[in-house]
Length: 421
Image 1 (cartoon, rainbow, N blue to C red):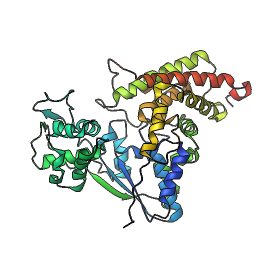
Image 2: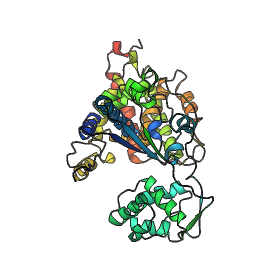
Image 3: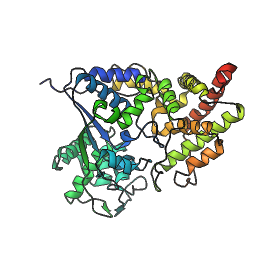
Image 4: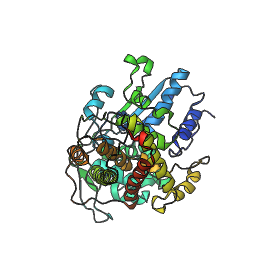
């Protein structure tokens, strides 16, 4: 009794506040176990070309490692469901070699499913196992979702053969909250293994998800103290950023001229529309800034002050613009985390749906070859552009603000601070 406690944490207060909370919860613990769904936490923050949805992965891993280093306690990792991220441009060969000893499971859940009938579904049925798991995890009515997508009643959760699958079904009985994709896959695989009557059939046999349990190396144990992601994170000074304006500014500055193309985003990737949304918006930003400020230097004297200043201005504007929903989310946060302070106005920019607006804009404004040439270079690593690319109003407005604030910040600088060296 008293040996286990659960704490709900949201990750979008300013970064120093959130990490302070993490460190507080780690105090006096005897070991650390991090859980990773997917493989995006293994993508290098500075040299990796295609950024992921991994702000919190990087920041929490750094905090956990810092605590483990100081306290001398072991730090472990539990990981599953690599297919969730690989199609976002993750270098699967590199991750497999350096993390999974050449045994990374990939493609296991991208197999197609063939529906016997889909008349009862409100939308087109998902075409792969991973798409099915994502849809199940996000459906607003879990009882209905389990019934329509799996022909399974959540009241029968105890019939599932393992604890995780049973717990996921049980959670669908209790709440309509999001279900982890890894958990949804466990339910699906369990039902397939039981010979359950499903409304679809897999095109090829379904395999069990791969689970990894490993101890994370400390820098003192690694050659030259270099630990892949962690060392790049700290070299960029992201571990000491007080807020998201500084965090994102330092991140983009560290990536300047250091992005390495090891692979491209695979054809058929479910992330293709999102990449093109952000690339098209970033092109508008870069064209607009270059037109209004043809002498602009994004990192004058290797300083990140210009970009951080622009992000700070954006944050001030976001609070006042209803399209971002800042006030609504900020007001709702304490109901999910009682001691929640204030939502960072730049919280959206940490997500994979926004982050490349920043990164692609920086790439095009940094390029000595010009905006269009860099646009073409980025596009060469993506699948073919969809015939129609739609933008959410908040994304469109975020890009407009980025252009306006970069121009305003550049024009506010004195001539000496604008010099390249």
